[in-house]
Image (cartoon, rainbow, N blue to C red; front, side, top):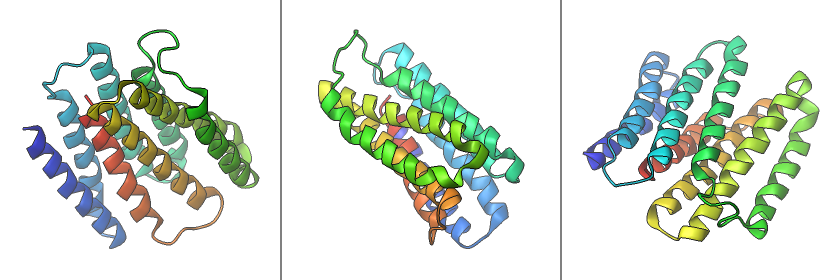
Length: 210
């Protein structure tokens, strides 16, 4: 069942990206949330035993992400609601990826590249942020922490599902970076293709890590 849902999610994601590129908005408005619903079902129906808390937190993060997707499909005034939704999703993923034991698997060397990237990227965005400087700073900190914890979890456990979560976290970071750069710094050609082309695989891999 998981393989069927994953295949359906991939097809739906591909159509979503294609319709966004072709500006077929009605189909896009249906397929974008549908893709996330399929991804949510993958996590919800996962049979492989995992800690109950991990599955619950990942599911909650996916559902909140779906809400964020819907907000971002509406006019500009809903952007901050979308940002808050994805911030909550990042917090839920942080809680899911955190070590089960205090300090278990945390690595300062693994943090360094993520931290440097976040600082340099935020410095680049800052001039164009205006009143959103603090919210974007908080979100940048949250997604950086999420990616770092996912990396530490993979390095510590060295298993396939933690690897999926780690790759998903990195793709999520890339997707949001392109979104932020396109919105607050300089327009990127085919930005939505890059954003969605990394966002959906990110969420799919995180769902498959359950």
